[in-house]
Length: 510
Ligand SMILES: Cc1ncc(C[n+]2csc(CCOP(=O)(O)OP(=O)(O)O)c2C)c(N)n1
Ligand SMILES: [Mg+2]
Image (cartoon, rainbow, N blue to C red; front, side, top):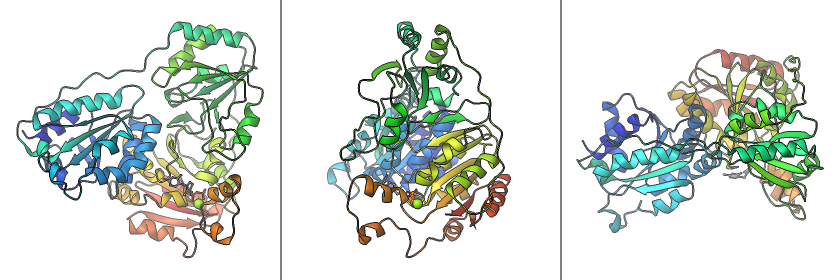
């Protein structure tokens, strides 16, 4: 058995059966092993940004890691932005990077780079295998490191001689650390805060959001308490039957207004909220000055369990909330509000919504709070170009569920190659392109940072001259597509897309 075969056998033994790959010469022995192991699903991607984002989307839905397969330092560089998003999502990713053979590295051949240094920027764990016999044990350690609560990117670098040399040994799966229970004293001290009747904010993130709110929602309905989620979240369980939860707004003014008067913040798998950027003369922290911050659960602790225990300690005085009546789909011109209304009415049951809707997408989150039950996946690290890859990985991580991508046009163009993977694997993904033909958010940011902008500066944010032809772009990658310039047409296309198998793209012209 060579090192590559010991790697494949170890992955399968550790429950890793999906690989997103863009390989090169140094990964050939791994590729060659695929024919002997049909249980390993290897999904090709045409750009490494797709690999990183798809591994993230897969992990968010499957709850366990996929592997990536990347080529040397430069292949990893291309994947880093979306691996950064995965790091911020705190999901498990087994990041495999093939590299120069051990004895070839000193020759400084063209693709030689400081692969470990690059990997460290996104990884909680980095190791370079030293020899074929070590590869299996290294891979088992990497999977456990990726899965330690709450989840992280673990990078294993594989010099090509370690893969082709004989002497491979299959690694034994290792236990990983589950979320730690929150100590009783902490639950009780937060319970005492609730009893003081002062104005509180319960800020719930991480796995507590992904599992459904239950206790948090009931606590959040107490008269003195507000319930919010952070601005960006890996996964939120929502829709009919689930309590709605708003997010801390993007704008600093809106956030300060919303949180004015709050005296205590209780963090559950979350951090004190800050603005995306600094703006001249404005605060970077979104909490009002003087607020007291308390931690109920850290990100590696079991926040959902802590909330249930907190609920038992506190004497609840809250009513059950009802789901409001559903609205009919919108008609007439395509606007963000009309799209939100139609999506709320027509979202398929158990959809996985992937939100990289940027400025148009802002109208969607609250509008879909009482749509059919669904999971909501967001861009977590602010690095745009994640939406199409996330949707691709989510479809593989949640087979049988429709993925609905709410996708800003400019952001989609960073990693458009994901469409080809969706077509090749016949993934059930409906992509809705919010085609405003500009970088709309940056037009607002220009004013927000106080920059003086003339026509040349403003033209930087227009995606026109030439216009992008979305149905043709999608068709070029093998994905069927159509354009909607009225809500009637959008409603028909959206229903049609969700009723068929395989991917479909709708350009919603705003
Ligand atoms: C990797 C990365 N590059 C660049 C940016 C800066 N940026 C933020 S939003 C944006 C444009 C977004 O345009 P679009 O996706 O069309 O959304 P819209 O603003 O039109 O809603 C850019 C370039 C970023 N956030 N991340
Ligand atoms: Mg746009």
